[in-house]
Length: 194
Figure (spheres, rainbow, N blue to C red):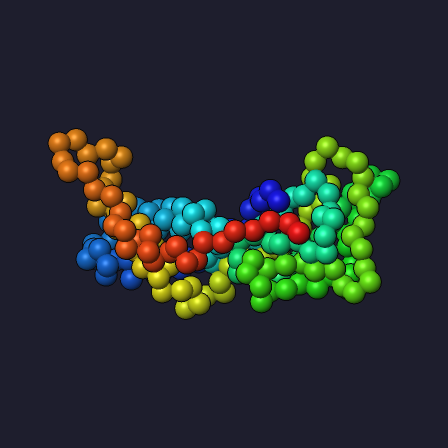
């Protein structure tokens, strides 16, 4: 499944006040910079973990429906499936009826499962992107984001703030401590289509 962002998160998992406290920054002149570092840290961690941290909407593109009974939906936690559209054998856009499938938000990654007795529609023979799954994923509020992920975000943001250049000449090289990876390793997600 190829993903395209449809709507980005409108809030971040860490309030700016928490980042300021962590960095011991009190002046307001660097707030735009702190926001940039925090957003970039979130996006990097989302890519690293394969997990959506705050609610966002995606379009997931498939070349055809799977041969199995379900589609695993990337970027957990899955909140909902808005629609499943496809090009039918006449190469006309169509929508799968919502009663033809169930949405499993309890599994991680979430799944779209065919309802009993149903089959996936036959798609047009297109070179790509015959099926589009629009879905909402992510934690609904910052309180639901696991604390180890929040701490890892603080580490990443602090690292960007304190080391503003990609190379520091004449100093000892500094990398993120192993504890950073220890914080997030259990939240990595693998997904596929069954």
